[in-house]
Image (tube, rainbow, N blue to C red; front, side, top):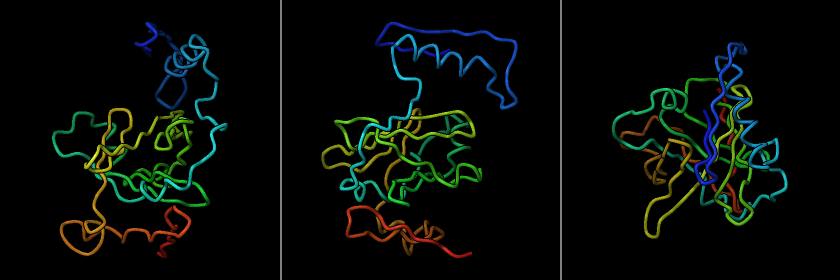
Length: 188
């Protein structure tokens, strides 16, 4: 089932066939049909929006899950203890702190709104998924990373370095003079 409440549309697709990935045929078919009904492009990732590297330094860092009860165990298991935003290869990446190898590599953050440099989309091709990622910072508040049903808060720089309960985390990436974060390659 997929819905677009602002447009007054919803779709339910039933199927008795599916692929080997556990989603079946209904989920991708429903998403494709809804995109067609809304006159949206077939591809969710927009390549026509230029990146804005001048904003990346504000986004880079460690983000931890919100405290409280785990209400969506599947998403929490995929995303683990939080995420890190880094710049590598000239693109911002979202790297979940998770035991799932395909997710640990990181997902490129693609710009998704020409008017807002803090709105991105990530694609997880191994699972046939894409999600909107929005960074927000209320006036005087902490930086937040919002994605679907997940919410992460940015850790202060001091919490990601030496001390406190987060001493097991690697050091925060250094800032580059080009407005983004410098990628740090760690040797094993």
